[in-house]
Length: 303
Image (cartoon, rainbow, N blue to C red; front, side):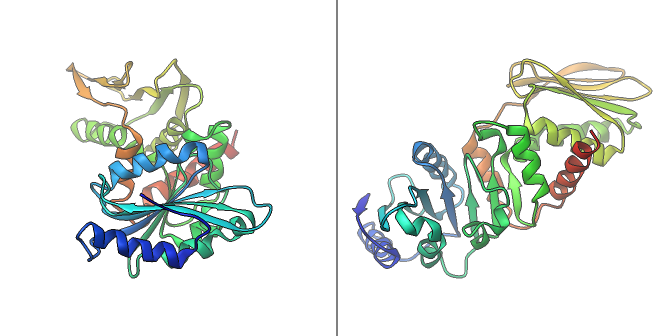
């Protein structure tokens, strides 16, 4: 990594070219730009997660650390390529007046004619689509489960401010659960009369799963608490008996259905790099998440 102090966008872009030349690959083989906005204490872990995800999605990764907005403007950066990255990377630290105009630094560094995704690994703006950096991206990824306080409130706020292109990793964590539940009803085409989601007391993913089941099945879905980890059980009631998926250890679940023996199902909790890689596979609007977000807002408003 090359250190650049008191630099600007033009010098960072020039260093990208030099780093590709040094690596012996002057042509760009990257498919998108990924912007990561994180505080200093979370930046290293977020960049490592993006590094692992870049093996599937070669990207120009721009880490942005927004420092103190007071005082004169300073832009420092670490720029490089290779070393396990699937593309180019820059970790940009902003201080002073430039913090209020971070998009002016990032915009010249976006890959031309390529999609842009942005990820807030911890705290995110209340309305990502209208955030100056968020407005640069077609895909805006938040993670309500990673905020330090008020996880459920953060998830509800993201649902209220939903715009096409928004998503949350709390929703991505549900992909295996949703696939298993949908498959269970394919195997047992029974009318569901009610459902229950059991999870940790504070779980944005569980809140979304309640909303998704309520939206899809048009039934009342109850929320119960457990010690976790995460979601521990989903039960759907039918006239022939419950269809149940129970996962007590965060790794292996037991699938129970009417008139059939119980069977084990792999349902391991996934790490952030895998979640991020999944979200980067699609850059169009997620219609199902949009409907689920709207239903969650409606459910919370009725309480």
